[in-house]
Image 1 (cartoon, rainbow, N blue to C red):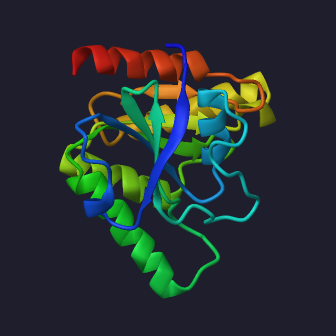
Image 2: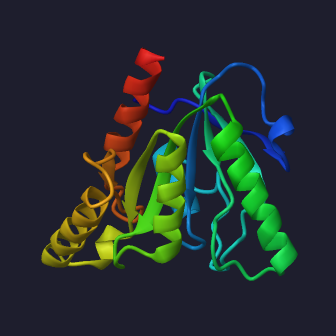
Length: 198
């Protein structure tokens, strides 16, 4: 898939505010500071479409970006260790769970995990929640350029073993690097196939 146009559509504080035009959503979520904004900018070929920050928890709303006039790329708030108050963290949690579990136009959810680390408790809990509710999702490994080939292979194998301990088959897996533009075609081609089927 080629991205001909990518433009900000709207930010929403709650599910009732998301666009209701029938276009499908492909959403991206992950632990705070996992590299979500960098990945979104890499995918769309727009350097500052999603705001990149070194401060975890910068995305606090559901952000919709209209792609090629036919579907939305959705930037969801990060979960986890954002430097915000407990009440704000609980608010993010409600925003995330309302959207992920109740938004009928969400076609697929990309869950970003840092390829440098073993499965993190908060990622495991979130992925388990998706499985329990039958939410279609894939796992996107980020920051793979920070690892050697052997380290990456080892970490991916460990993650696959872990996932297979919970499920009979693996969800779609994507290996990415925003710095090297790795995985861009894989994700965009996957979205294109989904659009053809829906």
